[in-house]
Structures are given as structure tokens and as C-alpha cells.
Length: 129
Length: 129
Image (cartoon, rainbow over all chains, first blue to last red; front, top):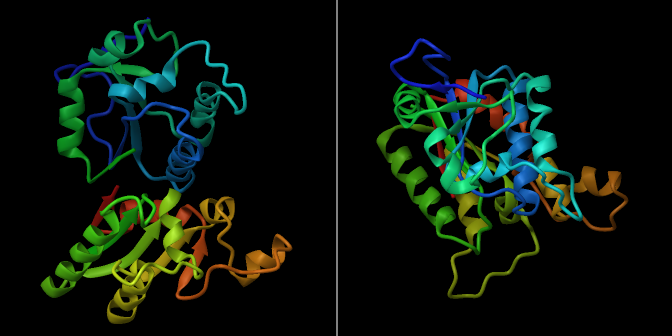
């Protein structure tokens, strides 16, 4: 079970240079693969960054993804920490509205809207996909 | 101020290219520098040499060429997104054994690392979608 990172707690980083928000559902054709490639490139070039799955973007974290003609994006997400992209979060308040299920992954942490607002204020760059 | 522009939408799909051009021109008037324009996802289509917009439509490729000539900014197309969509310069056409090339300078085919570098090097990264 994941704990939620709140703005008032000491958990998690206080600041990321670049904040990437993924707000759209997965499997949007080539676009989804390209979002992952972009995040990987931030990691490969040592850019301090975090990824937050927000609103319909939480669909990327759904269990049991079995696309017929492409690789599971859920499985590809698991590769991000190997590239150095380790700060992965999802908006806790959207979890049940969007997914209707609990997120079982250990590599993605829940964050509160207050924490996200704090990161947005502190970030030097914000990119929304 | 040193600015990187990112574009993600196809030139015919959205007003984002016109907005980006207007933003770039206004920035130049202010004395800011447009360091590079990075075209990713379907935005790479703007580099297609064979496009022939109708006479009452804005010739966006030409507009970007004029901006580059005026400002000295780099026009960068993501090389992977371009190859995936059939946009090849002479070098890539030879590599893929394609009989035609569809991208010409000043548009350059570059890796996503050039996109990532902006997050740290540029004072501002402004994305249009």
C-alpha cells in the first residue's frame, strides 16, 4: 500500500527542476510511446525531474493491461527507474474516480493535490502531455 | 531571455504553430532570444518539403523558415518521430534506402537529447499543444 506524499509532510522531494504531468489516457498511438521516450531522455541527460500521472493519465497505471497489437505501457513504465527516472507519482484524489482500483505498484507513489501544487510552484519547468 | 519552444501538434491540426510563431515574434521584439524550436510527435510534419498548402492557408513551413532566418534559431525535428512518419533528410534517406528525402535544411533531424537539454539550458521552455 502506498502512502500519500503531502505538502505538509517531510516525505518526498521538496523540489524538482522539471515536472512532467501525464494527463491523457495511454494507448494514444505512437504518441504514448513518445511520451515515455521523452521522459527517458530527461533521465539520460540527468535532468532533475518528476513524473505525475494526473486525471486520465492514471490509466497508464491500470492493472492487467493487455493491448492486442502493442507492448504494455504499464510494463514499459517499469523500465523508467532503470533509466534514472525514479520520481514517479500519481494524483491520489483521482485514483478511484479514474481507475476504480487500488494502484499496487511499488515504483509509483501517491501524492496529494497540495503536494502537486507545491511542486508546480517550485518547478523551473512544467511539461504537460 | 533564452527561450526554447516545443511543438507537439501537426501543423494542420491545431492553431499551436500559429500561436508559437506569434509568441516567437513577440519575444524577439522584446529582445528575447529564441534559441531553438523543437518539433516532436506530429509537429515534425511541418518540416515536410512536399507539403503544398492551399493559397488561402498559412504556409507554416515557410513561416518557420522566415523566423529562423530572422532570428537565427535552430529548427529541430525529432529524428525518431520523423523517421516513423516518413520524414527523412538526405542522410537518413540513404540509411533507410529510401528513394527520396523529404526534409531539407535549415530543419535538422536530431535526437530527443536536444529536447531534454533545454530543461536546464534555457531560461524558459514554452510548449504549444
